[in-house]
Image (cartoon, rainbow, N blue to C red):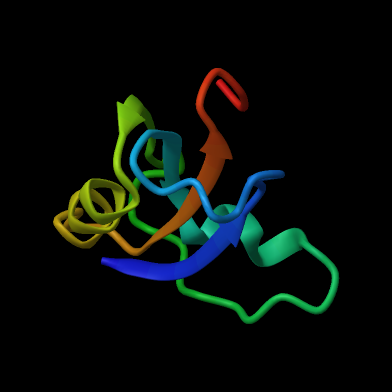
Length: 80
């Protein structure tokens, strides 16, 4: 389930094809002024990527995660 969305796109009106990354939201706990979530039983955490998908597909993918995740969006060809 998506808990947070970080949009790093320089072209924010491009939605057909982007790159996306999901990462366990608890990785953000150390960031300044971050809301905190419980750390999972496994300290490994989740980090996966998808290239050349739509914003809608990225959102559906992120929401399908069993773990709480932060979804990062990047312009096509960037961020990964």
